[in-house]
Structures are given as structure tokens and as C-alpha cells.
Length: 427
Ligand code: URA
Image (tube, rainbow, N blue to C red; front, side, top):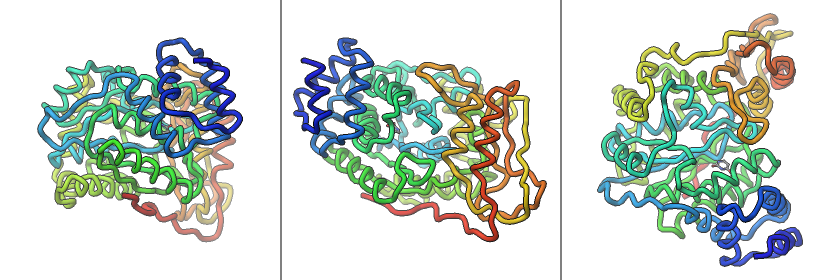
């Protein structure tokens, strides 16, 4: 394989064949292609795009870059849920326990934060002791015994995505429909679940800025899944403003736990239940079981069992103050009376990143305790001097920039309605 020829082909708008894509992915995982060449190719894909056929072949090559789990031995319906990335998006932490409590097996791989968006694994790692690296045996045993397992990407599942994801995060090559579709679907195919429910985010804080783009991504992923014999459905959901009121890591886990208790924000509750209903319907089960599992406390109990099974301190589920928040608190106050007319999710995500909640460079350590609590969201009235948001910071790190971002994320107007949350379903 001549790496330069391969890169130039995409740079000049060519279409790759299945064999060369497989060889490219294999060589990258084997360390024969350096990051700078992969980064150049990713940038070429960003500008030139890929055909649906190329995207499907890239996805298969990435899915088969490591092991592909066979969950059929579990003898139960297996489901995976994935988000295309958003700000304050902790729905996995709510949906997964609901589905497991409703009788499905949730066995999934999740990613870390990407660009300005958070990642489920980073969030879960704010739970003392919780570990994301599981052997295949541990993964399967937990799926069987607990019905809920979430592993990070250091497993030997879709290792190509693990490496490419980290590289895209720091080379400006995340918001590309074929790259997102292949990244998400390669993990889904490798992790083996039969039913896949996708939450495709649309809006300022999402990688897809318009409903048209989000629909294209959703259709592509549904098609790739169908091609591979999986039952994939996608929900398009709004990401102009963050989901819920918490943005960060520990602070988001706290909010997810509150939501499972019935004390969470309405938007997070509504979206989580909508996604859970979709997954149950795809599994041929009564979608009303989602609400039963949530209201009865069975989902909360499932979360406890899941945290403990992966070595975490399950006391956090009942005493969420054990999820430490950074000690510094800055209150952002409104300058005028009015109603919150805009709350830019992208800027809020970036503010949390600058405070240390995300990565600026590949491999950076993150601070699980920092983040943002949105006291006011779109459509809510506010008086001059009232707190709009609280910024949790450590020794002022990144605070100045985060303050400026948060100040410009809010626009106070005369009247506004919260944007609709669930936009459409693609199946
Ligand atoms: N989530 C993923 O898993 N991959 C992407 O590329 C974007 C969001």
C-alpha cells in the first residue's frame, strides 16, 4: 500500500475500493501508517466526502479491525444505544438502566469526549473505582449476569475507531457524515447487539447543524446496520441548547441519577423515555415497559448493580454528593430582565472543555469535577442580577475564557419557547 497515493486519491475526489480501505485500516492499526498520514486522509475525507458504498466498506473494515463479539450465546434480546454527540447528553446513563430493567440486555461500547461534546466513558469515570476496560469474558459475563455493561474503547473491539476517533478529535475532522457514521456503526457492529437505537443530535451543539444533514447521517447509519443484518432505528433530537442542566462529568452523572429517581429535568426525562420506547418497540416488546421500569425504581436498582459490577462505588447512586464537584464556583448573572431567548450549546460545551472537563490534545487528562450548571434555559424568565449559570472550576483554570463563552452563550430577549426536543424518527 502506497500511503501517499491513497491520500492523493481522496484528496482529488476519487472513490476507494473495499480492498484498499481494508488494507489502509489494517495498516493504521498495525502502526504501519503514522498518525500524520491518517490525519491527512481524514482531512481529505472531510472535504471530499465518501459515497455510501465507501462508507459501508470503511465501517466494515473498522468493525473487523479487532474482534467482533457474538452475543447470541446470551439467548436474550441485545440492544445498544448511541448518540452522535451533544452537550449535556447523559441519556445513555438513563436509557441503558431503563432498558436493562425492562428485560433487554444492554451491552455497549462508548467513547470519550470528542471536541466540545462529552463522552459516556469520561462521565462514568467520575465514579470512584469504576473501570471501562473489561476483557471479553468480563464483558459477556456482566451482560449475562447484570444485563447491563458499558465498556470503553481500549478493548480489542473496533481498535481502528479508537485510534481514529482520538486523532479526529484533535485535527478538526470530526464533523464529517461518513466519518461519524463509520465511527459509530463500526463500534455497534463489533459490540454485537442485534438492536441499535441511535440518537442523532441536530443544532448548534451537535456535529450536524441542520435537520437535513442529521437525516442524511441517520439514514446512512440505518442503511449500514441493515446491510450488516442489524435492526437500527434513529431518533433526531434537538441540540441547540444543552440537554438537561448539567454539563461536565461528575455533575452529569449526578443529573442522570436524579433523572432515574424522577427528579431530573423534563427534557432529559422525555428524551430518555422516547429512546427507551424506540428500543423496546424494535425488540418487539411493549414500549410502556420503559416508563414502568423508570417509575418503579427498577432502573435505579439496575444502575447500582451496573456500577458495582464494574468496580465502582455504588453508594454514589444514593449519595450523589460522593461524586465530587470542583470547589470553585463562579456565578454568571443576568444583566437585564427578560426571558432566555438563546443558549448556545456549542459555547457551553466549549466552556466546560476550557474549564478542564474535556481534552485540548490527544491523551490529555481531564478534570471530572469541573463543569457548568445551567440555572436558566430557553423560555425561562430571568431578572437582572439573577444567576444564569454556575461554573465549577479548579483554582480558576480556564475560568476567564469559560466566563466569556458562557456570557455570550446566553441571549436575553422578550419572549421565547423552548425548541421541540424529539424531531423525527428514521427506521
Ligand atoms: N460519536 C462517535 O462514536 N463517533 C463520532 O465520530 C461522533 C460521535
